[in-house]
Figure 1 (cartoon, helix red, strand yellow):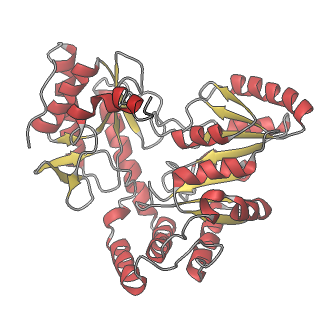
Figure 2 (tube, helix red, strand yellow):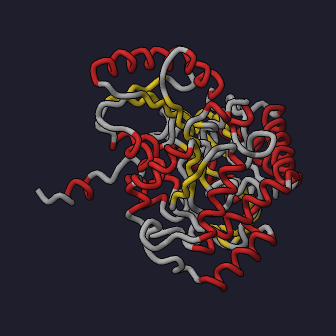
Figure 3 (spheres, rainbow, N blue to C red):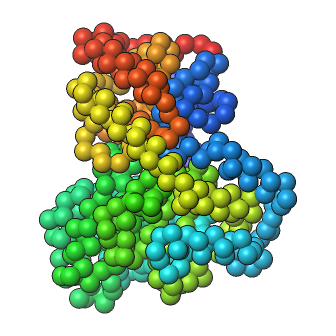
Length: 413
């Protein structure tokens, strides 16, 4: 059989809808300046789908720094892998400033968050080690676990009793393998918006010997008194052994970093295959990251404005009777009941008639009969944006409850 034959017959759970969804629900094109209002198919929409938490994407100081760095260095510099020929003073400066911000001894930069955390897990664990992880960890973590040749035990989402149960299993296993235990969870879970139970997991260190790796991609810049993340928010930053963060959320850029004890970070620096065999991060990005970190640390008003908008949006949704789950972060899910045809029609209504653009999640990502809209408030949304959005969801939910939504055709451009 031609190996490609199965790919054409079975295009995957999302790909099977590609002919109808492409360009609208999948791979849509938002145009114009990045912000709370952008154009989609030529019309202005209020956008709730961008992880531009602090509004840094178009902050004038960020734009000026990015532009100057690109003009000064171009996108090629430095050439080569960082270990071989791609290191600079700027790269090392950024690592030092991030270490100070995170309250950790050392930091290593990662070209990308997704491949970075995968490669870190691969470098840390061998076949004798056991990984214990939260069931709702991000896909990048799950793919990293797939690289692991040893055992892995999953615990129910944020269930500390089950976490301890899996730790007991891991302890028994390493008595025979001679390995160690790595616990992996998230600071803020990006779909539901609830914080990981970092404080409770860290407390288990008093009973069990393990190391804790936390993916805090959505917590960096948004959580904690200084924006250092969910560990700071919960008072356990010092209990997190490895702290992973990305610049793709609050940083409104690309790239990531891992912070921790100096010896461990240096080990990762010399052993992460995704870094030692990849070209170094271009200087305009590194210099841009330095400016972003500076603004996070020196302009607390950015985070304060974000949370002002978060509270207004989430409070408004609750007052109107919406179920937003257990979010205690800026991530704002809206849980509704309905199948794919209804979800499609409702989303079309929101975009075409109310000019609201937000992400929608349906089966097979979540169980049949459920719809989740995920809204991402930012520091640059306005009170008017929030008011219009609350009105739109109130009216479209009434239509959904009255069973008015049927299969609808996507309008032509």
